[in-house]
Image 1 (cartoon, rainbow, N blue to C red):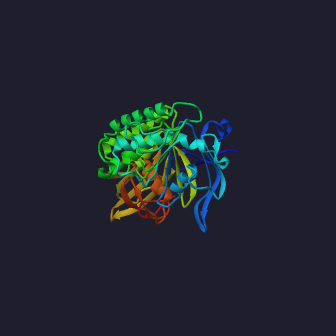
Image 2: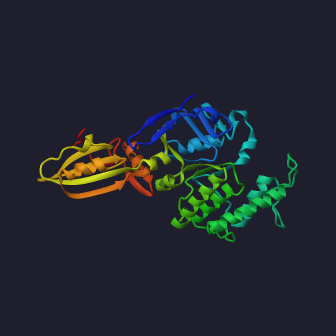
Image 3: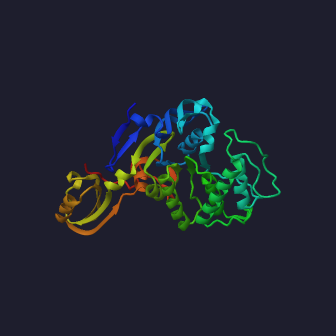
Amino acid sequence: MTAEVVSLDAGAEVTAGPLTGASLDGDLALQLVGVSKRYGDVIGIDEVDLSVPRGEVFGFIGPNGAGKTTTMRLVLDLIRPTAGTISVLGVNLADRDPSVRGRIGYLPAELALVDGLTVDGFFEWMASLRCAERRLSAGSRFGRRRVDRDGTNGADRARQQLDRARSLSDRLDLDRRRRIGDLSSGNRRKVGLVQALMHSPDLAVLDEPTAGIDPIMQLEFRRLVRELAENGTTVFLSSHVLHEVEDVCDRVATIVDGRLRGVLCLEEFRRRPQRHVVVVVQGERPASPAGRRGVSGASVARQDHDSWLVEFDVTGPMDDVAAWIGEHCVIDLSSEPVTLEQRFVDEVGGDAVDEVGGDAVGLGSKGSSRPDREVVR
């Protein structure tokens, strides 16, 4: 099975569909082949093909209701697909092997915690549940002691997990003495993030991991994600904070109306930067820059009686564009990099309104977030 490769306007390649060769077995953390999920007549996701190699930080973005959480719940085996196959960490979920669940860490978008416990008590409880041991402190009320199937010492593993939880808490400036019910929404989010990572999972599935977390700790989260990937953990991340996705992910997939639009390689996206250029030209109607090297999406609109607004994107070197600019009487000029956020808005288009980068953004005419103008081709 080969991957479909499509070149988009930004000049970076996207791949849709499973990877090839050795990646079809143990090299993949996730593989979805022809996966659909329907709720009666309602489509959750439709024929999604997706492959994520081990150790990759993979972003998963889309408008609200696009199918992101449905896909995550399918990967976690919390719901079952209507059609298609899903493999997680080399295990086909159709085999109903529960052992793979212990190798996954999950942070849901809507987080339910035990409000009556302290933060440290909650982590201790989670460690005891994962390792089939009593709570580590005296006066335990949770769980019951039993021997692990593989004969390993569950208490030692629980202590290791608790030590890691405490270390992660310190990094995220989380007070472990506080009662969970008294925490702010951002600190509750930190608790959820720590419990997803405290057992050093092979796969971390994180849905809106930094929602409500302050900017300084968001930066610490990004450093943490990079460390996880360097140590071999695969991170499957969904977020509306698109500059965060662009900064930390290796690749990112866009899903709209349950269908995968493509998978963008962010290394290629960064290596071949695209810029959005706005030029105000005085005098007669300017010649279009559409034929210049690297230019796409050129538009020309009258600004007033003797000036014209010219907008376009350019990928790669700008020397040919600079020559075009020198041929006109320019009274204003701006050039900004095209970000993943702008790429997402332009690609999704339509009448959708989504949370992008923390701000509500209304998407204009399909395929573009910019006002309608006379387009010169």
